[in-house]
Amino acid sequence: MLPGSERQYLTIQIITGYLANHCKPRIDGVVIKSVQNKSGSNIVLFSHVVCPAKSVIWELNGVHGINDLKSSGKPYIEYVNGSLVHHAIQRVAYRHVGKSLPDVLL
Image (cartoon, rainbow, N blue to C red; front, side, top):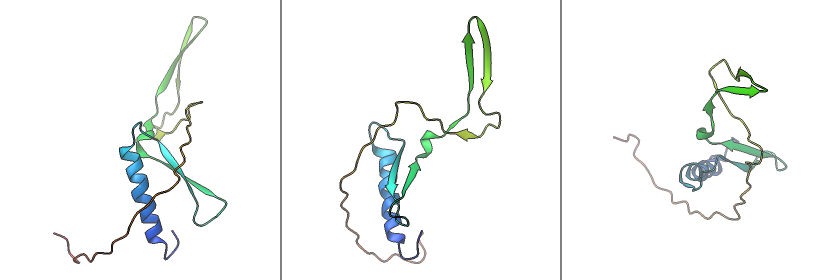
């Protein structure tokens, strides 16, 4: 985050939080143009797309086997061919209203 651009990042966090939790059908992430590099983009994947690794049970010509994709037990992300759908957001309008908050919230 660049100094002085905190509000712009907060806006993106609010929008992506809304998209992650309120879109039907559910979306897995967004691609956002980079503020720091005008020709670049950032990919944001939402936490629900991360899943624990699972073993794959296979059968070929009567022979059965198990492939352990990840023995570490750590989460992973797998791309499924044909599952990528691009939705373009043309415009988002919001209004910032500054409001003082107490130093200590109880």
